[in-house]
Length: 402
Image (tube, rainbow, N blue to C red; front, side):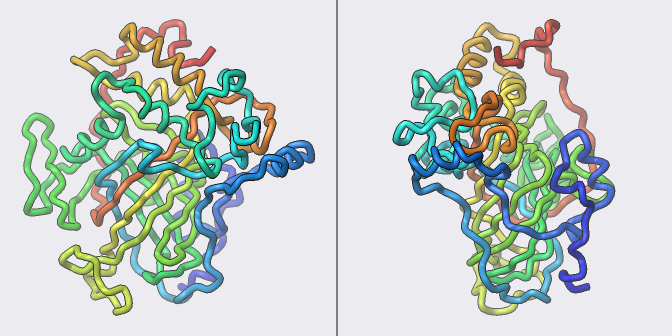
């Protein structure tokens, strides 16, 4: 059926909250999502904020815009899956985007929310060039909060051992350089439990297989990521010059430890789609793909940019175990909490903090996660259970900023 006839979707889709995600997924799938350009700043500026933003105007870093023409609006490849194979949380390698419409600290510009760090103009709180918001990356890079481990090293160990990763499922794509209507689903993968590639090796301690990277690694998916056969986390967007741009309508879970994931709100996913041959080498994109090549794409220079609630980033970092003890149960966690809370730079919702001089409290950290994703297969739903997080949180304020 032509895509032009499939633009109807649930009216509540764009307003979905995490708690309602499962109910939402029951009434939409990747083929029924409407289209629309990514929204970087959902809330319009007030007159005062608009005047302030003009006074401190800067070149804001945003994703590319939609192309004027669609190369093949009636063509559509079957849905295909790409698994994150490497991730990096480093603003020098994966800067991010301007998420709040303000170049904080440039020419004295205020932030878009009220923060503990405003008075001192902490270097971590200030935006990168182009108004780029990525405080989480700067905090992670400035000092190791995980002993001698980096955030991306923890994540990449899980991926390379076949324990956990993030899957992206691209639908409605015409396979060309420009497509003005694509749909993207995201799923948390809970491991490779059977060998489907020659290079996979079994870890007998976990009963999972390492990725063979042959294009057929089959990752089982978390039941919390799917409703029926539909990913709960979905979004629409476009491809321009093979650059994918999608804004997800529901919070994205980025795996970190076995216990936890970073919950990224209002996330934008971008990356360059690379058509591959059956040997998984880049192929000539001007020739039609073979049947086997129709699902073979790699996503390079990938970027996830969005807002992570301070409470969630504290809980996620607290789940990291050193010598079997979660970080949240150690004396070092107080210093980590102070560092995270004092550098919150965004309101959790763009509706609560957009434009200069926003009045909402800063209760989230901006984050940019770079990644490379490779061809893979979505496997069955598998619930491996979640290890308990043993923290002394009886008072209920361990993950709450003062």
